[in-house]
View 1: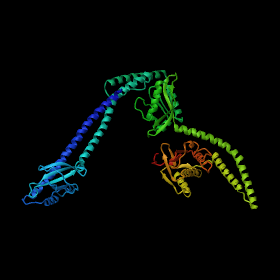
View 2 (view 1 turned 60 degrees about the horizontal axis):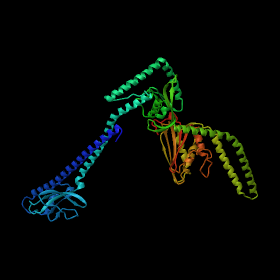
View 3 (view 1 turned 30 degrees about the horizontal axis):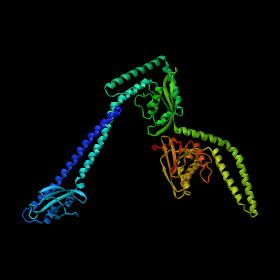
View 4 (view 1 turned 90 degrees about the vertical axis):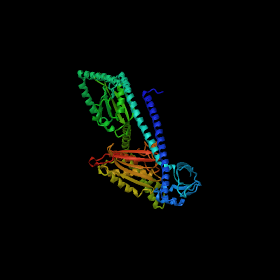
Length: 607
């Protein structure tokens, strides 16, 4: 039925456990319910017997007693609780009652015997009733004292106990499952490890040993494998030492490691005996591990889970003598953050063309995309800078002449009492083109910022106050300012950047909404951030790659230079401008800036 020994073992153990639990749970629940019912029956019957004895002891003089006197005595001298007293009354064989408060009648009971308990059904519920005869008391020969309780009241505690028992059984089943799983793993894992190790050795990979905890036959076989592997490793080390290549290779590796630390990508390498030999600074930053924590580790032993996917890929390539180029994968840092990467693996060769290890070079997909985007943008900006001088001469000067002549003609016509609207249009359009050209020239040849230490929160607050007078009534601004270090800014040049992002957020919400502005410090990126988020129409995917291009706009008015200039100004401050958008839901612009270390907060919240 099942091929795997582990699956068969798990199946039979769990089936046995479930069967035992079903039997045990049935016995426990049935036993608890049966004992509980018997106890409640006995308690109600005993209550009525005690009441009859109490009445008899008080009216033992032989005088005739009326049912009303009897019930009045029970009400005042029985010591019953108010709830129990409400459910206790007198009844005779004709169905007449004293102290019975229920609307449903007649009350049908079996009146045979001196005392008993019975079950009845009324008001849509089952009831348990205790009944005791008062025939030995003068005047009460045909009367009985009766006490009742409905099932929810009588057996509520029993049902709670049943629920607790079922819950405990379920919990026990879960625990038993884990124990069974662990037990089967302890049986099958050594067999699997032995099989895998044998396959790796057959492929030429001698970097793994088999670790066993139990002392059994499999442990003896594993020990034999480990002895063989250790002998092979020892022989390889002796050969390298005798040939003198070990020292020269160590010098080469030290030089290579220094070069690795200056490369923009993460680098991890292992040697041919399964030891981690390289872990550069970029790898440290991406994964949150220190080089000293992993260098020299034998990959047959437990290694940090963050590097395990890359180490496994290195081990496979080294065992097969193969390489991998531009492979997409996902890794996690020590904080559990997923990082998409692009990696390549190559085999390392020694001086005599022998295999000495494997090396993996990887970069974040986000860094690659950002680098390509920055490269393309730099090329565009370079082209724009070259065009700016000729545009200033070829366009701006003629525009000035056109406006001057139009203004002169308008003045002469005005003196003759004539008004030509077309002249106003000419002057308005020349002014608009001049403004567009000025913005373009500012973009192509921006003013270099004069950096000063600035509290970003104060600058944002100032810009928000500037926008409040023109802010539509159906748009609200919420701010969340966390403790952050100061940044180096030219406040005069950076103020329009913040203002432009707030105005864009306002225009993205024609029906109103909320603009959330947040500041904080990201320990992961080691930068101060400013987020401006709206819940407006969002940016369509087909336009997302064009929003930072000059002259691109979706508005009826405007020249499409706002985001282009803002992006250029953020880059001039050695910062990063990022955008995230969901169509129909939100758009978020994030500005990341380097912090002034001397003003770093002692307890900044990590994002």
